[in-house]
Amino acid sequence: VRPDCLMNSPRMSPLSRSARKLYQNTLTVDLDVDRLEYFLCYDLEIYSKDKRLCNLSKLSFTGIAQRIKANGLENRHEDLSNLSMVLESFLSSTLSLPAAVVYETHSYMGLIKTAQKNNQAAKMHFLKALWIVCSSSTEGQIPKEQLAVAMHRLARAYMTCKHYKEAVGILQKAIANYRIAGVAKEHSCVVDANKVFVEAQRAFAATPQPKAKKRLSFIDEESECSTQTGSERRGD
Image 1 (cartoon, rainbow, N blue to C red):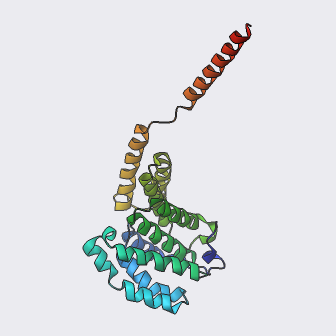
Image 2 (image 1 turned 135 degrees about the vertical axis):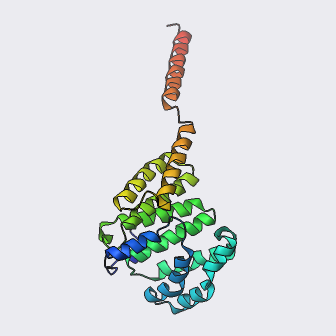
Image 3 (image 1 turned 90 degrees about the horizontal axis):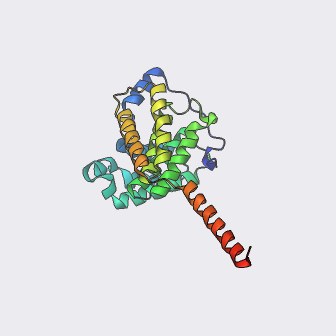
């Protein structure tokens, strides 16, 4: 389902070549806490008309990058709860947003839900982020590297949920899209994608697969046995 906040969203200009190079230097599949703090304290007030929400966000999250760096994201329980509340309120209260902003918000929410061990919710946010970046209407608005990052994050969520087959398939596409986007193979995102891909392959190979054919064979044998027994009882 297309997010409501994408309806009638304004278009954004594609990144210049120099801006794209700078963007790749800061590319990460994990949470960029400095960017998150800027987003919450400054970007929200650009797009949201809810002044109360913007003031709450700035009051609550000024200095959050330093707090997370000092204690780790998973240990900031109160911050995680507040982050979820503010980001969800931002999306639900703003009817028209650029696709890149909606994509970024769902990506943050997925990473936050991952830190809260809410893996199913994380997967849903990553799916929404991937839908947005794949949408033809967002062409030129979101850097093409983000298609690979969105797939990469979703694949890691599938790994956490032990859906190894899906993780393998998505990681193959993520690695291919990193290459298409021109991200160097030495980049930390590409290195991690290849590492997780190998782990997913091994986990999938070690996972017992359903023995559907054997189960059907057992049912057929049981049915044949019942038929024979019925025939014997009738004296056929």
